[in-house]
Amino acid sequence: MNPILSRRRFIKAVIASGAAAATHSGISSAVAGGQETAGEKGAVERLMSLTINGRTRRVDILPQETLAFTLRYKLGLTGTKIGCNRGECGACTVLIDDIPNYSCSTLTHSVRERSVLTVEGLQGEDGSLHPVQQAFIDELAPQCGFCTPGQLMAAVGLLKDNPHPSREEARQAMSGNLCRCGAPMAWCLRGSTRVLWRMGA
Amino acid sequence: MASYDVMPDVQLYQPANIDDALNLADRFGRDGWILGGGQDTYGWLKDRAKHPKAMIDLNGIETLSGVRQTDNGIEIGATTTLREIVRNKTINADYQLLALAAGHVASPQIRNAGTLGGNLLQDARCWYYRRGLACYRAGGNICYADSPEGMNREHCVFGASRCVAVSPSDTGTAMVALDATMVVQSIDGERLIPAGSFFKGPNTHITQMTALRPGEVLTAVRIPSAWAGSRFYFEKVADRNVWDFALVSIASAMRIEDGIIKDSRIVCGGVACTPHRLHHVEKALAGKSPGAETADLLAPLASEGSRPLNYNHFKLPLLENLLRRALRG
Image 1 (cartoon, each protein chain N blue to C red):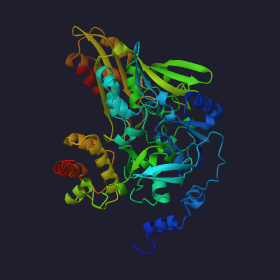
Image 2: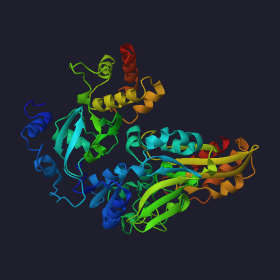
Image 3: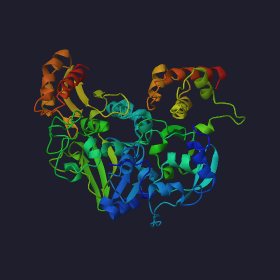
Image 4: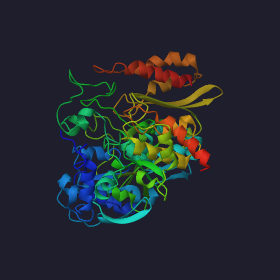
């Protein structure tokens, strides 16, 4: 990929320029083509606090904005991928109050006062990988890697809820995430539970 | 039809109590969209196939969520998520049919966000309708699925009337089998609607799937204790075990005393525009004992009265086999 014009760099550059972060212009309304809706009486306040990966930020959010959109295009957290954008692939999975959710099918306004964990929040404070991330590497889980952030979040969500899942429980929990390479994620998850046990987590 | 990844311009209201929500629902009428988990909603909006002016998000209303014991059974708030229902102790102990049905909906993440009310009220999944075509259900005057070249593999075999879409709800079949009552509120007061007459076929309301009127909000579902602890069976057949809607599903409840079936409810999903109750099978079951013999005897009754379309004849043996398995137990 052209290193100068890569998608990631473009998105980060737009965000860094401040076009999207704190104003109502930015890509969102440009893409949506929506004129600004005057705040109807009783409708949601656009300026809101979001707690993501333990950090609280004030962000200007359109009423109809999805969490995946906010994460990627307003906060620059491009680890969360948008695959189908219809709740049918799982690439956008994030944890909301420790429960896996499709961020493409969640309104950002509905996570006010809740805590969101994305793949960027998995690493330790010293920058070390989360045991599940390490296990995915050890077990050679990803192939193309596009679905991996969603798979990781689904796996972490399962282990937060059930630290010792059976193989069937792991299969169930990972069933909301597609991998078009056909990599056996539930198998990797077994690896990650092994790692967790080893760490006594 | 163009498909967009971003949501269209639409206003959002997050009322904190039910009175505010009812006032908003009344104020916006048909232009308002009552929002539960949103898992049916956002596709409609992103595809620009429906154009509400405002979404009214019920999730901030605490009284609408949770499972409560009542004098005669339980009451489940409309915004209770399917995840909570699958995990609820009371439901699993006494009304396991509902937990089984809720556990078969879509995918884990959708069950984590999707609500009971949203699952019951979701719109038809006919791909022609979803695509935003002006079919009967969308207020037009043609059915694309029921045409010589229409792809109608997933469509109905019972009760078609111009529209041939099926009811997509997995929990809907369980609700009808459990004789549940829908609690519907509006600024004019409260209506109690039995689940059996809550779902409407195209011969009564072609543009809507339930008895809910504009301005009304489904606030809770009441399940009577009548079927608590009965013998339940739920099975759903779909192309994939995750995400997909039922090709055919069956939800049954049987009250058995001394080895004899006293009373039963057999309800099928994916075969009609509403959850399809097999009244004649229920009648024939009374007084028989459950088992392979009864199952083989009554299974052929399941498809009686069916009118399959070009590509969905396969649903008839599927339906008969599911009934056989439900009765065999």
